[in-house]
Structure formats: C-alpha cells, structure tokens
Length: 332
Image (cartoon, rainbow, N blue to C red; front, side):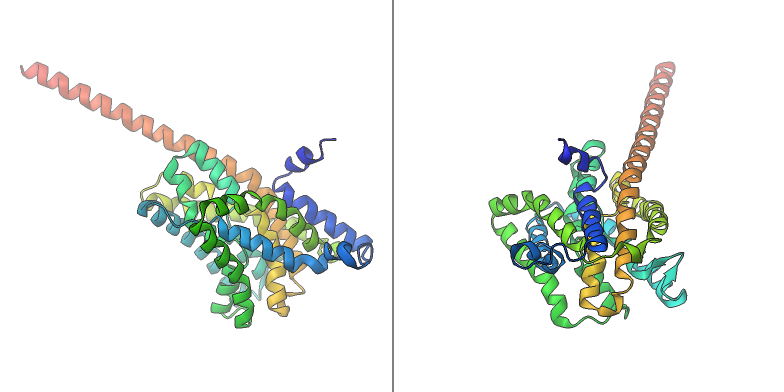
C-alpha cells in the first residue's frame, strides 16, 4: 500500500491528513483513545508536549550565519508579510467587530504571517539563486505561535500571561542555541522535524469537533486566495526594492502547513479565543492547501516575467553596442 505517497499528494499532507483524522475521531468517537496510559498520551491530552518538541526542532534549524544582503532582504520580506497580516488583523478587530466574511482576526493573522519554509526553499532553489534561498534564515522566525502571541499582546488583542509567552519561546531559543553551537545537532534535530509533525497534527485534531466548524471551509478558501494575492503582491514589491528579483517575495506568498497548530496554541494561552480557535484551525488548513497550489504558480509566472525582462534588456544592450560599433566604423 502506498499510504505515505498518497498522503504526500495532498498539499501539506503530513500536517493536514493527520489533523483531519484526529478531528474525525474526536467528533464521532470522542472516547476511543481515552483509556489512559500511552494511548491517551497520544490523544489531545498530549498536544502541548508534542508541540513543545516541535518548537525545539524548529529552533535548531535557525542559523544566523548569512551574508548581510540576504539578512536584509529576508528581514524585509518577513516584515512585509507579518506587517500586512498585522494591519489587516487590526482593521478587522478594531473596525469590523473581529470578523469579516466568516474570517476571524485570529485566522487572518495566523494564515498570512507564516510562510511555508519547505515550499519557499524548493521554489527559490529551482527558480531563484542562492541569495533568494538564503533570505529564509530570517523568515524562519515566523514559525510557531510566539510571533502571533507577541503581536496580539502588543496590539491589545489578547491578554497572555508573561510566563506563557516565555514557555512558548523557551524551546525555540534552546533549540536555536544548540543548533548554532553544533551543526551536527542542527542537522540531527532539523532532519527529524517531519517525524514530529504528524503526531502534533493528530493530537491537535483531537481537540477539535467537526460539527463546530462545518461552515469554515468556504471562508478558508477565501482566506487562502487573500494570502496568495495580498502577501504575494506586497512581498514581491519589497523584495525588488531591496535589490532582489521578486522571486523570493513571490515564493513567500504561502501559509505554512504547521501554522494550523497556532490558533489552538493561542487559545491555550488566552481562553477568550477558545470558541473561535476550531474554526480558525480549519480556515488556516484550507489556506495551506490553496497556497500550496497557488504559490508555485505565482512564483513560476513571476520567474518567467523576470527572465523575459532580462532577455529584453540583454537584447537592447546588444542592439546598442552594435549601433555604437557601426557609428564608429562610419566615422572612420
């Protein structure tokens, strides 16, 4: 049976498929895994432990040895993406009652602020250059719930105790320190992140009831299109302003598969988000799928546009040089 290959045919499959399996079990067989011991530890009760493991592995992959230009472009793209997400989330929260077309402030902020790192690196490695791929060093800071929590607290959209904030960032910092001190540790833990993701998704799914989010799918598709168009446009502009081709900006127009875990993490820290977290999770998961399809198409289209412009400029230079040489010959 080709179970693994089938799962990977789904965009973000290692996150999305176990997430929905967990939700189905929780909805129709809520007590199936509540038998204690190791089995229950792999149910929704174990979510926080698995999430902590995931945040640590994410931290080990953060390296700060990169060229200044790459760091500047990466910081610019990240600021553009997160800044756009924050601006739209604030508008919805302050002027639209926290909801627009079924999309909550939480769903908008999470989906728009976190880039799919694997897709970004794959696209920039094939269609871009080493500097394009290297900009993800800074963008990796987006990963996980800490940045969302920090922005929500700073904007007055959430009340999260100080120690809860520390508890989220501590595994990331510990991983980052170890990963930068020892490259072998970074390689070991970073290469095993994909093993943790399905467990995190499955335990997360068992905290969500499908009946409460039955109408979230349509608005999730709208969210994905918004992420693709809005953040893609803004990131391309900023990338070009900072000396890039815009390819890295286009490749940043996605929603990270693992960001589906963030709404519930925020709800655990601030219970006022508990009611909307399940719907936000479904919407973010839908955005993951939409952008997994749309971001490669956008990046490919922009790549062709950039190279067409470069070819036109090269042709113009050849014509100019030929004209100059002709004039010199005539004058002689």
